[in-house]
Length: 322
Image (cartoon, rainbow, N blue to C red):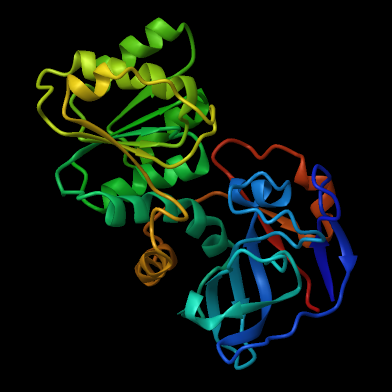
């Protein structure tokens, strides 16, 4: 069979022939891969920079996907940290880390939406006590995960959702996805902070895909503009597109009812993630959320690997049959 194979960190994977993987345990099964997303998490897996990386090579990247089992059933699957990922014509899955989906669905849509949707879905349902009627700010709302977060927050009962991001074109589309207000993060940092403070001072939850300088400025902008600093504000840290570190002054934690929680692999148990898969997959298949997949043939992976995706889109690799 063929797969996308990383032979050296720092180089894009190459489409090449390799031996078909074999199941070794009774819960494992060979699956024909129909679609798999090229997520930021997959890129960090492929360059060895993710905190779960074992630095083993060669490596077939891909952490999740949609496939067909030998009996014809379709599944969405998550893969463990392994060198045999989803970017192949076939891969081995653990049936306990999969969910069967109905036959009348679009595998590309599901592969595009599950990973970016899972971040906010699991964060809101597993990491914090999210209450219907809450006010939510999404930092990084113009990315694909951020757009899903806007929709998911609304779907789970948020009364008011504010989307903050840099891409003006996508910001203008956010109201159609459920955003009640938007904030541009471009321009003079002082002016950006003032805009955030005016628009989002009274939010209950911040879903943050940016971290770095935007978080540094955003935290203090919200807290200083907040009318009631005793009202709880939870900063749900999910991504670090704008920087891996953020310097927050200690006064932020002393002067307000403010807390920062992370949501991701490790902070949520495997059982917790798996428990959320069926309902999220059901809502995606039902068309509850708008997603923008870009389909790329797996044999064209090397050329497309370093090509930036349009803002708010998610590249989905589609293998040909083995």
